[in-house]
Length: 381
Image (cartoon, rainbow, N blue to C red; front, side, top):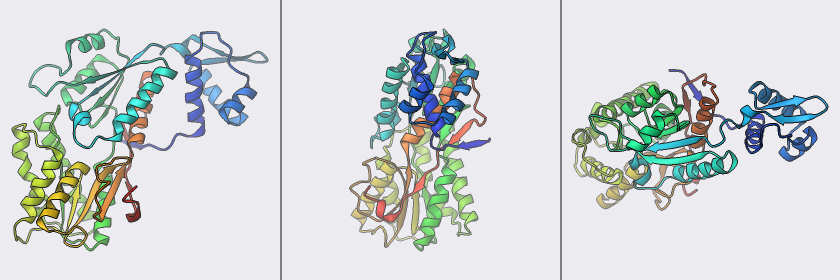
């Protein structure tokens, strides 16, 4: 599947967003400010403004009449009053370690309500079941009757995503089996973690995956777990690092919990796995560990402290963390921190959804938001 990496919005893209918002707040036939006034208010050059205006003319948002002015066309207001729904797995919203992702998406929703006059609704998916669509009946009715015009699906299962696709409603997924999706590819996390652990002298590196119980089926979660293990193993091979199957297989202790749909918190997973691996004098103890969840990492660090294992001396840890999150803020251990920016995730989802709602099919179905490896002196930021 082809992928695209999100880049910061260009000046023309920023100007386009501002002008679309202006058009949507105006009535059909309303005259906008003059070119000179727009250049000043938008802090943009005549050349850049002309590029954006030509694009909006082609999209029938505005029309320009030489010597008269710039006018709003009716098509520019088509999305006034449209309804956008966020459908999410409660585990992503109500779990430990509140992520800034949700504050950001709430702020963006409020902005869209104000600027675009959209209706923005939040809905929680029902627990995974063997039959039926995991949504309440009223929302199913709204979608099937065309009263929902765009959907952001977060952590939803394959059945729900397939059903949404059948309804023809534009939707974008994150941590979901969607046709159009935004993600942070795990292989990019591995690309950050392994060289950093190698620089710290690690030769026996293990991967500890978190298992998030929720609306995805057992099969989907097991498949994701297997894919991540394969990507980790491929990373070891790429960097010429030794592969110890017994280290990669250690997290298999959670498969029974997945199959039984038992809820084990991310922090408790970290505690249990650290105790299981480091409380025994066995040769398979790793000297480096990659964890894909910061809350799980916090649990592992607590357990290692109780066991007298010193992180940075006895073992090195690399972990994913969310920019702006407080989960690991109090930890003083020297960690390899691989930062994901939730603002870029939210912006990426909304950009793809806007394209779909405008009838523009993205060239690439997957938009990658790449992580950043933080320098050691940024640990407390």
